[in-house]
Image (cartoon, rainbow, N blue to C red; front, side, top):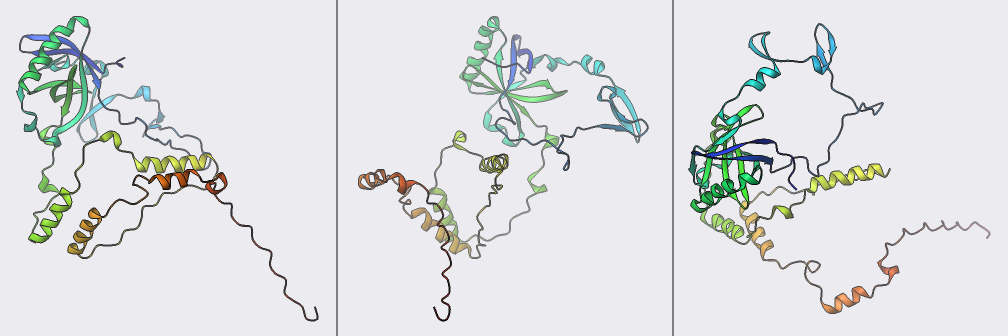
Length: 303
């Protein structure tokens, strides 16, 4: 069952249009630990207050939006006036053209949504546009008004619908030269060959579902330990020594990649498995700390 749509309007291809609705494709808060701000002494949750230099503390209902056109001079824009502003992309995703997906630099990608037909009557038109775009293998470039601003977007066919992705504007993108200086390093052929060998020996498949946030897990362990009233469980990263010699580091890396897996990770032999299964409960249970032995009395003279 689909959730609540964040936008409704029309998808338009030339003179063909159909009603559509937009759903967020991601959630930034799902499964995340969040904290509230408390006063350090009372542990009461604090709330944000708005303050006017003349009136002091004011209510949120008394706030209006203002645009500063000169220092300390503002023009007020009301919510009704903002609602009345409409352009074509306020209600319509008008496709401007089509490009290859590889032509778009990933740095421009921002937020992703799913685009679905709005009602059974729209399904036929929606399906025709979807199948046609899937057949030509192109990505549409269009515009849409979201959150009070017009956004350039891509519309890409996926199974049973479209993925709509908002794009950052060119003004939002920083050039690599703003952070990266020209490299002047001289690369030795043997070190390049070894680095390439290490890379080739570590093939991987993109599996985001296998990723686990270890920091989140450590944070949860800390919170649970404090709820239980025990000592805080603080996770510490292992200390790493500084690698001084690049050649030695490359050689050690190759040796590590060639090393067979540890016995504990390999499939246990039948004998070892039987031996492990035959452990008694007493052997498997964690041992209790040994009680301190009573101090031996010193022998006194004449005893």
